[in-house]
Length: 543
Image 1 (spheres, rainbow, N blue to C red):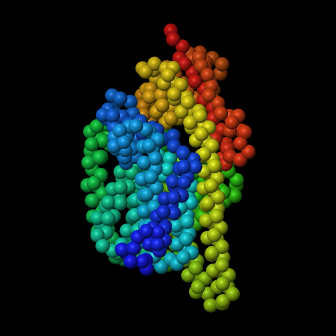
Image 2: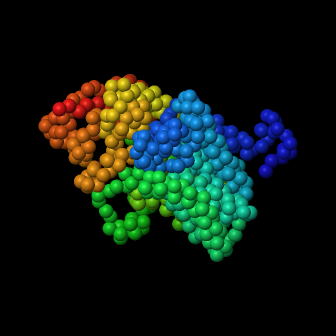
Image 3: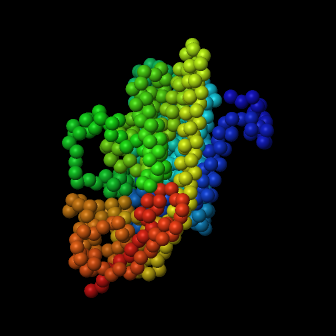
């Protein structure tokens, strides 16, 4: 793979070793994006409040004394807690930057896995360039790896799974078991992604590197699943003991629905899924409203190709296996949990990138098999042109997302949300309660007891939702009687002039960056920037 002896080092050795170049390419892109935007995601501050409490000896809780499982990813809570402890809790910014560096390292190793896959499977320069280039420039993967989310871990363990299945021969059960355990520690639904990929490679068994025999594949899967279960069991059992349930309260809150689909609807939905899938895999990082229609078309074409590739008569069984997994995982997000949130999509995007790299290889092989030289040359040039066009489009989206979050972070997140949290910290009593939807910044910086909707950190909110079988704020707020209500203007009340909020609360003030947002001549996704630009604060009338 490299012509340079292992003893070489320094700049010369680095330049001549492709794996190092691949690693540092995505590492530098990630760190540069972080420096340019300083983006810290809303949900990071939810989990980080738990991390800080754990590091301070209060336990992994959101509110001291309340054992609520207010985070989804164990790794995303435990690792920042460890960083807080090791750095002496001297700076939140330092913790986030250390975590960003770790996540960018994981992205770099993921890119190396993909590069090794390309070498083992004789990709050639163009498909390899597409494979690594898409991973390096995907806006969601980059942003949600540097903004405090766990996406880099999901990408790393899924890339490791694909590498093990398509390029490794020795100690496969152990390595696969470690990767699957990592997925579970990253997110409790990690088994869905592991299972979708595993099923894809079982159906298209010729795509597996270490054996083509299905009994051997099943035996390997069982051993790997046993290893993963044994490694994840301690956390599962401890969480059950400590919180009273192994299921994170975030999942319980998000999954609470009062309308149920009949069982047959899931089967018909599966059959018709390719026709109504949202196909959001390659859209920008967050908030798709306000972007040009060409970007939707771009994502539609690439996503749909990934979604149906397993149905095509291709001899590339690894790509078809990944496509089948892509199909199942997108179906899970879009139809089972019915919440294809933008921060979940990178778990399928990494599969899509794998598929597209193989698709480029297939196109070049097809063009090489054509005997007519002009047609062969045309198909080869067309493939190279399409690869170039896709990479340019991906890079442009990444650059626009960087512009978007550079502004949003400064104006909305720090200028408004953090300011609201700090205002509450200095103007509310420590025993006061707050009802709101965006829990992250405001909850972290106020450090108050939060009644958040849908109840990620509040059992009280979930209990009221269950009792009245409703998500209506005009029912929840009168029942919970919070001391403060924080809401955005578009979170409407429809009870008329004598509604509960107007009768029982006084509007204290408004934090607004609406005019600042409107002043920018170029702000990609501006419609979504407006959503969090205005917050109104209400205080409960006493007596």
